[in-house]
Length: 179
Image 1 (tube, one colour):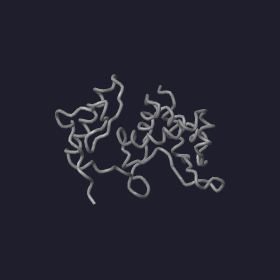
Image 2 (cartoon, rainbow, N blue to C red):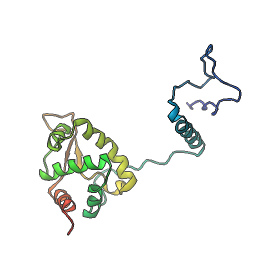
Image 3 (spheres, one colour):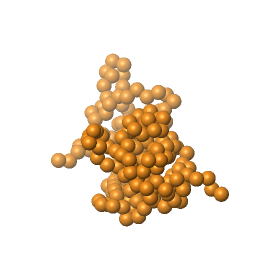
Image 4 (cartoon, rainbow, N blue to C red):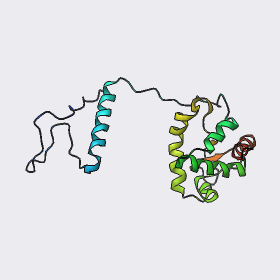
């Protein structure tokens, strides 16, 4: 089944909502937008419209099944540790906690406690991490900088995170002051 064609944008010339009708043309919805954002919303709509005409979306870049083909180098980990975004900072704190206790399975709750960050911040950083890695690192070849595993026996439905001793040593080396 194919999706219906998007409505014409911008709306047909001469159309304007009236206080009495309040109705939008077929295939359109009226949305209140703060005046300060009207130009950005219009630009976004134009980009979306252009994107629909540009062709099929790019293929997703997923790590191949099985172990990564390459490991994270100390230099890549160092670059990750020095990132300035909130995701970088939270992931660095998570890796600090994981590296302090290699091979231990940490739940998000454990990581929140170990890092002193709210659970929501940990979850948010993990959600944004894949996008960050795809944009700036060899995600397809290296995968995540830690292991993400099914839960422990006492928390089987919760994901756990861990690093082995080798990755922990590399992370600590990456975090060490350069001399």
